[in-house]
Length: 383
Image 1 (cartoon, helix red, strand yellow):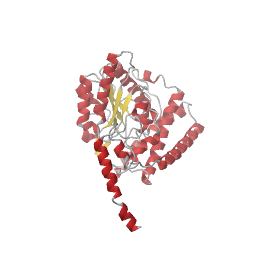
Image 2 (spheres, helix red, strand yellow):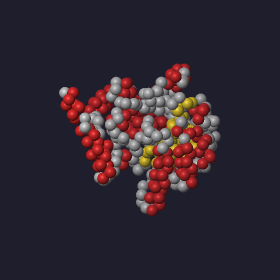
Image 3 (cartoon, helix red, strand yellow):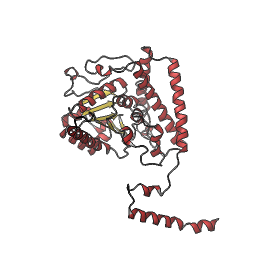
Image 4 (spheres, one colour):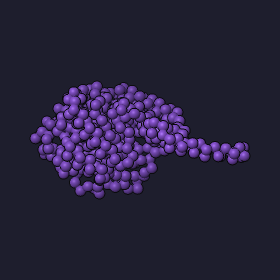
């Protein structure tokens, strides 16, 4: 594993030579770190179990969504298997006032923001362009255009900073822009980081480096660790073990603290692995070896935290069995919700073009109705 790492400008001095932040080994043992361990202070047994519960439920959700797609209930699905720690660890570090700009794979972050999981599937069933109201949870709609959400996050963060400057009583808050290693090569990310640095925007760039941009490996995307890119823009960049939920949580809390306090943007590279396909339309056996996949099985984020919970006496067989039953019940309810989803009528598309009625749209709707009515005689003749 590549463990090159960039120093952390603005971070405690003792982290300057840190390579890859890890607080929980694959065997579930805690690793002390003077700079980042204090950010775990709020994680008592209840919170650690809550993190594992979320990781387990979102993996079970992912499995059920994949099955629904294979059975024709969804048009497509984007799996997250292997990236649960990166998403749940960072999601648990957020405050309600923070605003998240996801890609199309942040199902775990959505769970931590309180979204009803079935709402995530409305777009993948092909019946909605969204599926939820972002204002209710400060979790933006999924972005299918690669990297387009990153400039949006910076612009929103700049607005947050202006609001706070105008009203000091406004809550300290930041945005988080999630994107992958492939998206990091898009111009949108570069431009967003330039603006974030220039305006000292309160934004955390959270890159889930899962090693594969569909079929393109990371080493083709960049010659240096992605965390190093922050240096060129003049703000901190750190690489964290993305399969270590505790390290991700601590790093994200630190980064959000930096951003909210006015210290400016931070880039986090969560070094993880996509254990399944890019989407259900993808076949990873065409471009990667099974030996590579097996090597990462031993770094499974769920197994890592489970070992720690058992060793520390924080969870036993009964607790894990109850959680498994909860996951199965959730999956059954999810299946029922999806199968009950009805497609909107074609006329609904005309109703959502503008907030208020528009004569041109009404004219097009009238044309559509006349067009449909023109088939009535043919239908009657065939009958």
